[in-house]
Length: 113
Image (cartoon, rainbow, N blue to C red; front, side):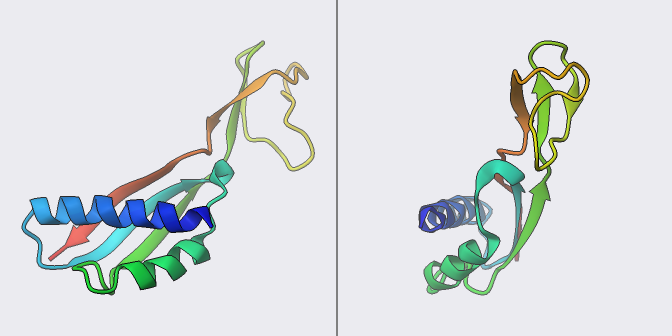
């Protein structure tokens, strides 16, 4: 259900910038979403179709770009993509890692007319 509030934020951001540019219509919105963000594309699209109705964003296409996860070892500094079975560092086997990529959720760009 958190996708509804996320989608509302995407709409608010898009409308704010489109109106600042005196745009008549929003055509495309490009989103960057990290693997660990837990956002479901289909849910965002579902809510978008409902809440954008009646705005200059009605009919705008949402484009989703997924960012893979990346971890950094806190002990040796090795940067790696985790696999599905473990998050430990493949270089030194330390379990002390931090997420360096994969939690992103942002509006990358907006195409307007």
